[in-house]
Image (cartoon, rainbow, N blue to C red):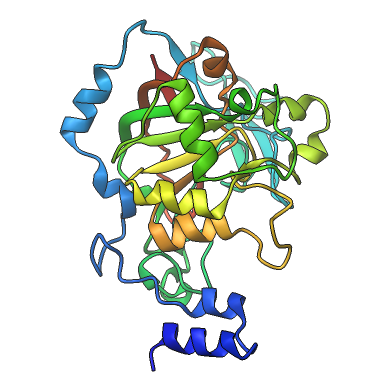
Length: 314
């Protein structure tokens, strides 16, 4: 009897644990190949870049990242510190006849702070990650040896902004409010946009306004994407999904005993990158729906998350 048949039989007699099934169900090999490490990034093409470039009509550029620093929104206990090193040290003369002085910096930070990109090694299911890779086979003394964000190519493609705040007729959605395929499709239809293979999809919820009102609440609660909606979007071939929230998915979760299923669905099961704390407000205010999306993320080796500043050009 296969796993699915066993699950059905066990459920019929009240013995089946749905959570255990989620963890044990085999989601690999990836549709992109048993040895693939790139996931939906495989859907990027030169033709897609040219089509996206043709979307530039006004030339207006939107910075989608927020400043990264000690006051950046963070999930959990992540921190950021910067130390300035003066050269020459205080009390010593400048170098050379032209009196050279300088400053360098030393930054100590989590890469998952402020506007960020989640790699496939960030969240898994029972110590397995994208394409079924085991965590113990990914980690090395210098960081991740596979699924390293430094290996992800630049993402230049069509971007789509879906304004969920507009769809629900609110300046800001409520904490815990979820949206899935029905709401996403209805919003796209009303706003005159469609998604396609190779796209980056961004959601505007208005939640980033909470940063200036109650930062602690912004960092622990949010509206966002549901599991069914995440799986549907991934199945359309999108490369990355982001929002103006700290974790993309709605918090509180639908089931407190099943946290971060959207992350597990996108990163581990589907190979789709997650973009967090994306500043969508200016584009939403301008009514921008599709645009050229450009991301050349920093190539810090061994990382599972990385600070980013993607750019939208309309």
